[in-house]
Image (cartoon, rainbow over all chains, first blue to last red; front, top):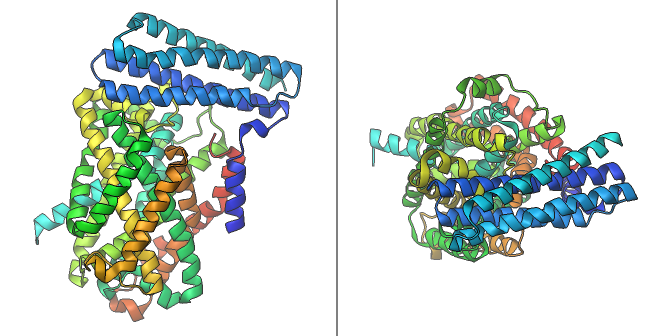
Length: 148
Length: 409
């Protein structure tokens, strides 16, 4: 049982970057994009609740800090997967672009909390655009995954 | 304290002390991904922990000895040793998750980085273990933990489609966005969270600390069979909040800060503050219980003097064991590992260790040498045996499912 547990832990912890066939790589990219989308949605909800006076600045800051970490880990995760062919590499580049572009608006929320810049409307627009780009990238990768 | 007041206090403490980091995180993760389609597992887990905590409490009340002491005597050092290794490993992992949970909860109220809170949290736990009386410790954390009722209030204020929630609960099905293997992986995680091994060892050792006798059996039964189910209701409320607010937005919970967003949406800063107090209390209470459980199991197996009813100098090795467990927990957390990931792994490995924990309790609760006329009846044995079969299946499936699903990814 102990051996099984240890083997399970090692396999369960295996980084997605070691999976090198196309279907698994695309599946891994989708997982990271979904994590980034979840983080952007979290930041957006936190901003809305803070503007409504429902979420104090300290808790908003903690939520956005976690969201920033999730997006940056997603970028790292997508960047380090080994694409087995040019088509997969192209989709990975698209995914890296979408996930990286989300990092800025999410990080900006903490600046907005500190001194009110950028404006709340601009911030929400940037977050919405990031969410849309991530969704488009996810759809593209999912379609390629389904075609495998 | 005697009479109805003591009974009420015991029940309230049981409700407030039911939830720990594993319950909080797992229910929120499940709610944000599966809605309430896994609520049946919480119900099953609560019935299971009621049955085995009752047996464990009965052993302590009738024999005047903690379950683990008797397990070693009854099953011999080798079988009890295997039990010790598995239980202690899972308990220390759970302690790590609880200290991490305390730090995350404190971060929500302060915005101070979690790693700065971790040693502070562990030091606070040690000070309480060192200085505060057992009953005071139990009652304070249990009663403050009651503020987690804020999740049930939040769910009510969110005004969800109750019919839809009832449909998800009563007609569970794997959501189209998730695979069957992931569904069953989280079912096992929820079972592990509800039936964490440390709970029964703590419950029986706590019975000895509080000097239970056969006269206390009725009170113990009430605490378990009333308090724990209400705790289970709070678990489902946490999943419900995530299902109503986070699931439609595509937010999959991977941080403590996400768990409280539905509460803020429903009740604003006041309800949020109440719930954060509950989060800190629940994780602190569970950290105290897991640290004590580590000390209890090790001391009871090795025959050391143990218990908070003794002065620390009279149970030095028991206290050292707890300090070592705390140091290990902080050491693991300071490597930068994600406390939420630790929590998720702790509940799955709890599920793996469940049969090792619960089989000996069933054996001892049926031994007339220890239990006299209070051995289990047929119904309790039938339910206990059924649960053991379920736990063996869950234990065997946990690691393969973790591999197949990449830990529920």
